Image (cartoon, rainbow, N blue to C red; front, side):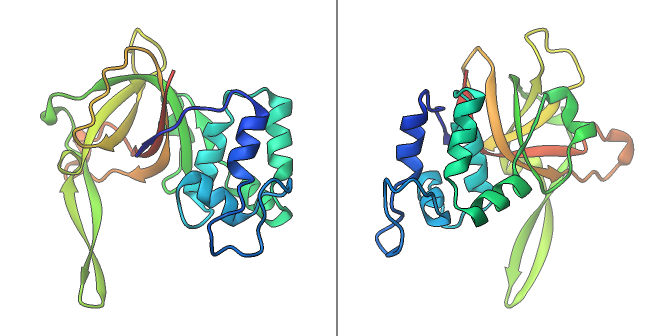
Length: 210
């Protein structure tokens, strides 16, 4: 999980993503006004321009005007631009996640987080992949064993409905204002369906304090 501060100028973000890629990307060049997969991946701190890279780009440009955001997207090479538009993260209010989200998709949620102190409040389990020899199996563990958990609300009144956001354990947010979270929606599993309070949790990759 990484804190991401949105760029305030188109020129700043353009310089960050038109970066020439890593040293072994021989055919990419910085400042040529064409952004490749390798360059976007480098800016996002990942090795392939997939979900993480598109989340980075979408959150990095949230401080720009619409016309400047479009100028940035126009810099992407044609294949990358098509992939971005196909996999562009969905922006949802916390109250919209349960009905508007789909497991496995990237989502950006902005709201007021409340740390879940009482572990008995939620009984959700998550699936963890485990390699046994050459066979991949999955184990169900309580979400609190893997993450810190927050309920995120639309506004300061913190009224339901809300969404569930999971972050790196031990990195408590003390920020009093709203936070923008970007990540991938994952499915929650429950041993007893009557205790089900959320269908999804957001597995956070980036966050921005507002």
